[in-house]
Amino acid sequence: MTVTERRGEVDRRIREACARCGRSPEEIGIIAVTKYVSAAAALEALRCGLPNLGENRWQDAEAKWRAIAEQTEAWPEPERPIWHFIGSLQTNKVKEVVGRFACIHSLDRLSLAQAIDRKAGQLGIKVPCFIQVNVSGEHSKHGLAPEELIDFARTVAPLPNVEIAGLMTMAPYEAEPEETRPVFRGLRLLRDELNQRAVLPSEAKGLSMGMSNDFEIAVEEGATWLRLGTILVGKEEAAQ
Ligand SMILES: *Cc1c(COP(=O)(O)O)cnc(C)c1O
Image (cartoon, rainbow, N blue to C red; front, side):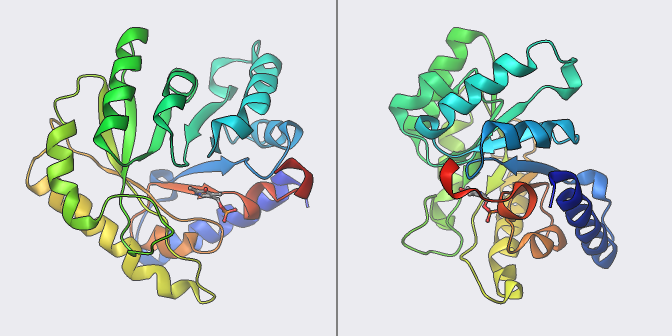
């Protein structure tokens, strides 16, 4: 299947999920997660109107990032890639990632927020970041414990070059996707609490949640960014 065909199918399922809960598909952005595929497949995603691309490790993404930057240099602005960093970010990679990735979805500690703020300041930019919360409590997952969120948000709120765009979580893989619902609902309630308490200088509306296996449930629970790899761009063994 081509990316265009897969995208048609994903769009249809998003529309149906939206219809079930009274949302508009316009509220939902799609990040094509290209970590399992080659630069050629990532370019195919760009060509079929998916400018938002996601990678989770700079070491693995670098060659692809550079190849795509070169190939898209002369493209009109709206078609050019907008990169999202979605994986756990080592502090020593911040200098590579900030400036190349428009948005960071994995903010999970103060030292990382400070490093992002410093690098963004040097570049004269503000970086939208999602605070990653480990709603499920699985040991293998990164992110703050839910009860740490409010205090953490208070400590990062004053950083001038870090803009908290919302919250991010990963649900455990479930054979029955419906079982992820409490995780996504939990993230939405945490976001609402954060905004109710007015901890941040401006409202954080975003919810980065939902992957290939569970995106329809995430849509029903309020996702604003879906991070879709396998189902959208496929998975090539060699590209990993
Ligand atoms: C790999 C990855 C995804 C996409 O995974 P699929 O199940 O292939 O859609 C989404 N989010 C994060 C953080 C990832 O690392």
